Image 1 (tube, helix red, strand yellow):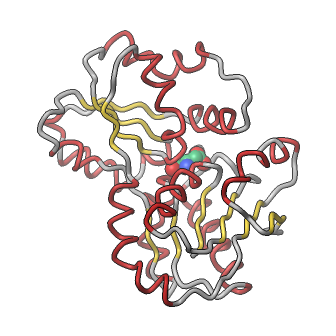
Image 2: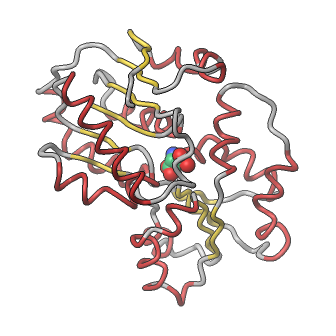
Length: 259
Ligand code: DGL
């Protein structure tokens, strides 16, 4: 199984997959060279994801790909599915399930600017414009999640700046669609800053459904025997990540040249 994200958000997806398939081996790609993707254009994101998948596919006999990133999935999932002849599962913001959950009346959607501006999200928001979903597009929250996982200091003021529309103008929001895999890492911090209990709607729920669908095939057809972690840039922040990676039992943590 190949799991891919610009950063550590995909690890929260991996946690969920491990619950369903505890004995599966995986290759994780962290494209830290170009993190964040959320401020990049469509063409860049499409080309980059094709490049990464091609490269990994050349080296390893991957049978299934998990795009553990809403930014990539909203923009390029359909293109990637057409281009590669193996199952590809993406994570997409769960806007419709949030609307259909009866008890939720005040819904907020938070995601990267690239995700919010994607045709996929814009179309769903337009189709459901009578529900008044309040949207925050931010590049900063994924960066804060990267800090948290490295045990770096998180400044409440930075969080308050991101969430100010929901702190000052839309205080009724009680349901938040997490449209970025990084944000699951920050649920406690979000509740603290909004000073209330929040119902979080995760994209992982739909993903788990698809994983279950393919689980037999994944278990039966395991060609990759060791967990491997790839990164695209060596830097100091990467060293700080090593502690958090321990629990994923990566046999190899190595650099991959994607230039
Ligand atoms: N984890 C990615 C997502 O789900 C976004 C982070 C980024 O901006 O690269 O959208």
